[in-house]
Image 1: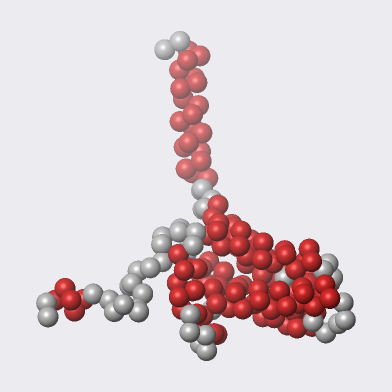
Image 2: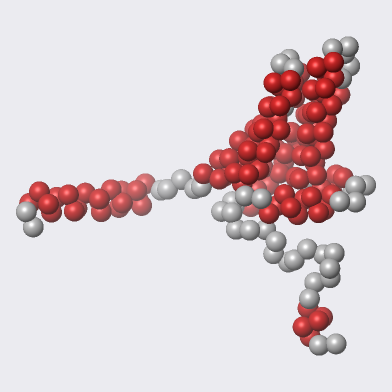
Length: 168
């Protein structure tokens, strides 16, 4: 065997660096993951509570909330779903998504049960899942510039205007 064959990853293992550079710091990425886990917990608990009724729309919203919880756990914390064989594959695909795609997916996923059955349980149960989408959306906007670089940019824009007024 050559050294190239020894260094090649095994077929089932992910590559060493599969996470794209999306501009998120480690602590913000951890904050998004923790918010996703808490969002999954709140969706699961509120979804179960929502299913204890005789109204069919509440039951449908509760079941959808529990599915949302499973998706959040699969994407953000696959170690919680060790009994599911494809959990790591789903998590790898979710890690390759851009932050704006995750934001759109999580926010839409959280809004659907609210539109299905607008109750306090669905509203508060999906609030943290929606907040997770908002956190990913904010990271998609990028970093805020500092005041010094903004002042330099404004100064550079102002200089050509002053030259045209002076006639040079």
